[in-house]
Length: 161
Image (cartoon, rainbow, N blue to C red):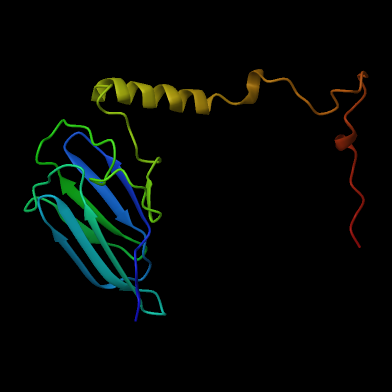
């Protein structure tokens, strides 16, 4: 049976790196952490597809403090950086693009440019901007019509038969 690399997403934090291997209904999950690489394998789905990924890491990790957790939809790996505070511009040692690996932009934060306080205030600002409804936006319904009569959608709809 052929082995396929599992699709994965990753993101960087000040003290750690997270990798999520996107495999549903995984079993026989094995994750081995080394100071400069991670080995991942599992069997997934009803077709029992074998997955295997070996990642030569950009930086070194503390293999004893690194962990993984399996869910029904994925296996998330928490890699403790050996050198906290050092940004990883990519996950892999080599600059070559891996077609199975992508950046998890939903969780990505440029932590090296911002303190945690600045980031939380930015998050609050973003939430405030998103919560500002369309109260001050112009009503575009009937914008071409220049009359003051009742809207056409105020009329009673005929019953459906």
